[in-house]
Image (cartoon, rainbow, N blue to C red; front, side, top):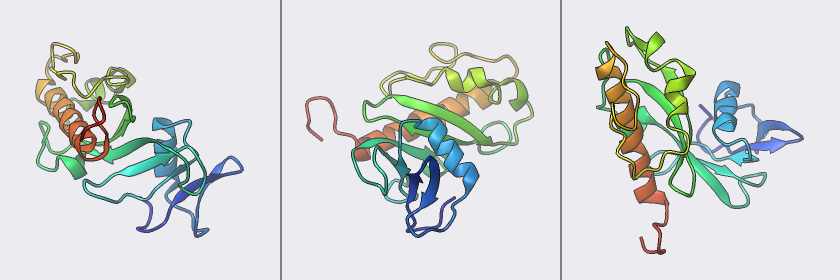
Length: 173
């Protein structure tokens, strides 16, 4: 994770920081995966904790989205064998831009939350959708607790970010 107070920017095709220090390259790559069009990212900050993705360098230009760790926003949410740490991107249109499963201890994770198909089903999902396992989220036999917990963490975290940072349709907050 980047150090507090350091902005991440895209300069000549490579992410760097405003202060010239090199932030965590893995996190840079993950944020860029969630927001390919972003030119820079803020450090994790605010309430609820989040990263901002900007269209311009040096954290300038319009915000093109927000990213958050599910474990920051839903720390009590547990899968079968503990928390499932995911990095989630949310666009200004209240739709999920992507999801990366970063860490878990789930015994059935290799066929439930790790495959790319798990994260792919969330892309373009609106925060107003139900996120119901067996409904709009695919159920996985023998991994229901894991999938349900992960879906709930994404849904609740995205809705919390939206309430705090997005302007609802009609322009009233």
